[in-house]
Image 1 (cartoon, rainbow over the protein chains, first blue to last red):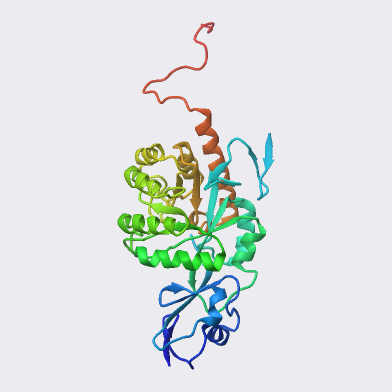
Image 2: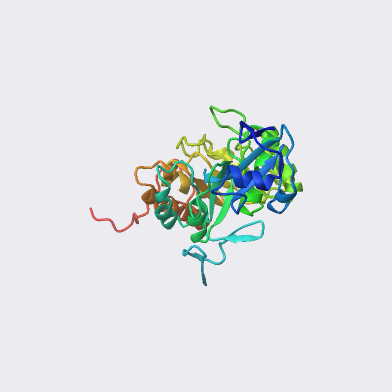
Amino acid sequence: MLITFNGQPREVPPGRLSALLVELLPASGCGAGVAVAVNGEVVPRSAQAECWLRPGDVIDVVSAVPGG
Amino acid sequence: MIVRAESGGTIPDDDVLVIAGEPLSSRFFLGTGGLPRLSLLESVLAAARPGLVTVSVRRTSTREPGGLLGTVRSHGVRVLPNTAGCLSAREAVLTAELAREALETDWVKLEVIGDESSLLPDAVELLEAAETLVAKGFTVLPYAPPDPVLARRLADVGCEAVMPLGAPIGSGLGVLDPWTLEAVVAAVEVPVVLDAGIGTASDAARAMELGCAAVLAASAVTRAEDPPAMARALRLGVEAGRAARSAGRIPRRAVARASSPMTGRIG
């Protein structure tokens, strides 16, 4: 199914958000220092394993960078 | 009596800046944006001894364990995520919520930019975002236009500080309108933090002399020829300005007034 991941279209198999993060972000997964939003709503780490993705979902993953 | 601050500085215990009930170890806040390389951050932090350190949140594809956050936290400094680059209240609120989840802090430096070339804040979106975030339990420090009326509105909706700009972000022009900055200080009970426009130590001192509770600088340090040296200079400028403000300066006079006695002169 097609989703949007950090602004880019991606074809991914159906599944849970936590599994997708492990696959697409092997270096960070869903660990500390990272936050995830699906369709403009934050999905806390504790809820990522129960978050089933749907076609068209828009997923953003962020972490801290230097900034003023 | 002197208390040893968390970051290693010494400050008189009757002049500690408190925001949202939390004492901060310094009145100099540091923004981390603009450093030519992250490896400089360690020496900049050591020289700045900041009370708060700002970071941004951005899309990521990897994470650097022990990088930016590790360095900041090793100095015992509170991290203040910002919503830099957000152009609407909606974007800023989501960015703040992501920052809270990623960095485990409900403090946020709220920025809603109204114009991508001047980087001036959008007052209408800012107030809306501030009200929403306060209701969601955030400690909101808004980057704001230097406007005493808006400052009061921001304080009224529950912001724990107000952060007026002295001049546009990254401009180094200092405090362009000292009269208005003093009016902002007079308008609100919450701490006023001069944010943006600082170019050098005298700008930081000036802002403190005008009554600001703290000064935040990023580019002035990170884009200086020698960032750690400028970090130290700004820290000292903030300290000097605060001391001068408390000391009570002499009134300005239009004419000279001799300080040496006129009696007993020879000739």
